[in-house]
Image (cartoon, rainbow, N blue to C red; front, side, top):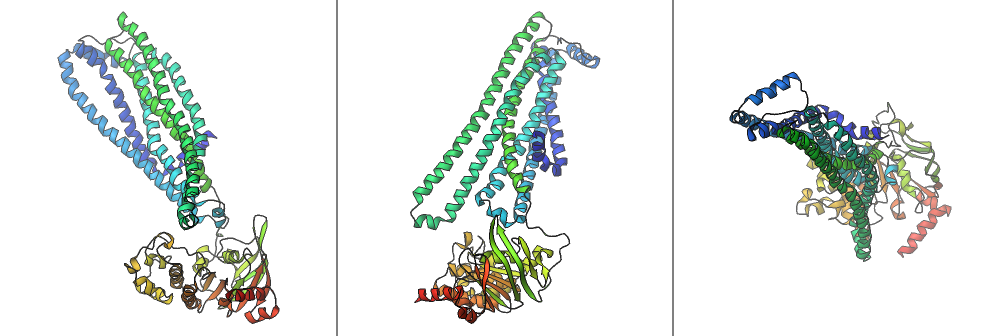
Length: 599
């Protein structure tokens, strides 16, 4: 299970294997230069500083013994004159490869993170609405921001340190082995003492990290709710209440962060302490050999340098393990999104919808949220060019009716037919491309007026955009704005009034020019003056289209070709306005109730 989790974390590395290989090669060269640099202590201490022969305690390969013998023959001044340019070249090469390894690994890490964000965002775009109904916006945003940031730290910095510091440990230990094989005994004792607490603490860190990332998602959700609903917060004087809620979440996140920090930070001094004790032991042990004359001081300095040089890599590796454990927790949350299968899938070989010739029909349609039936045995046909109004109490399934037309959801049973073809047989893009929608909650983006009107129609020119705005009675107020069509309207159209936002949305639908139009209570939240203007724009939009209207105000649907009454998910009445009034049913009751409220 552990190895599978790591494989899933590093699967994003595969597209960048070539660049990663170059980075590893640069690391190997840099680590070797670290070992060579440390090895220069031997001739520097023995020959240059003490002018004595280099004495090694172990029998070495002939070529190396010959090399040591050649150095021993040189005078201190001769060796110093040779060492100076060699050390200079080593330092330059070490700096070059040190830069290359860092830059290439950073590049690899950033490319991987860019890929993860792209893949994760693309996945969110294809997931069905049912997924969003069960997730908070802040939680999903946290997956792309906070969780990906944790993985970024692990891959950009953690992976670099994992490889490079491990190579350094190998080089230093191998160097000491080569010079003095008895060093192996100490290494096999010390290394497990360092590795065991690193692994043990890492397991605890993953659990804490999972809770920490979930808490950050809670904070993001709270921020989105309160910033997006700032008018309500202020209108109800709930600033203090929201501050208490935020402070509670913020404090919980702080506590989890400090738990993680305590366990992470204790590893550094711990490994350093173990390494220092090992250094003291080797100082005494190997120092006895120097006193006996079994090895020279330079070799002693090399062995001490090797053991002490492993402290820093082990200290780094303890931090790397913390990063990796946090990344595994974040990666699991990322894959929770990536592994989710959308309920709405396009059928293989689905056909393109070119045009609509006959109309739309609901045939024995049932739909449920969980165990609750929302629509029950819906049977209705709307011919091309007709207007169907959908009326009913709140929660009767009116908006769900429209969602099925757009294939945001599929029926539990039954079919939605377009020209006699089940819409599940059509490509999703061609189906939705023939349907325009204006909703009660106007969705606009923090972009220019032009971009919002042309949303989904990027290739249209300014004349077409202005024509759509004029048809929606929006051109005049747009031109009164300082930048006109280039004015940025703010988050969700914050700078516009409700009526202005609706007219922009209607202009967007007019520009799309769809044969089928869905109006979901498009004027219900407007005052009388704004409603009159928007209704005029809606009347323009409805011309020569097949229209489905979810109606709140009964006065707007008198001329509909057909009106259905939804009650508890069922069609209880169907007919024209006059016919339904004559039936003395729910429609007449709702109609008279609205008229009495007006008077």
